[in-house]
Image: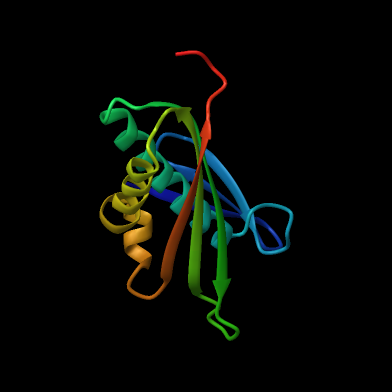
Length: 136
């Protein structure tokens, strides 16, 4: 895996992946900050796991959102100290125990982004199940 970052101006950079995808980031609030992108990576990575686990179990999932909140150290470096991921899973008759297990497996076993952070960051999760209004 390769990514390059290119300084644009002031504190703004553009990251470009091997495939040519770009992401702008900066330290002035005009784009996501690098730390916000790390938090987004945890949400995206773990949500992919949750969806895959539920689909593998043949559960009818129609949506998955992950809302994340993080706390950072008061001093520099202002690393994450806590992350809480709250999953909103929409589907048809998925037992809460199954959703909880999918979230737990992601955070504790499969999500590379979370696993890279969990030695120094307290990572927790919660979830809600929303019954789908779509017919199966």
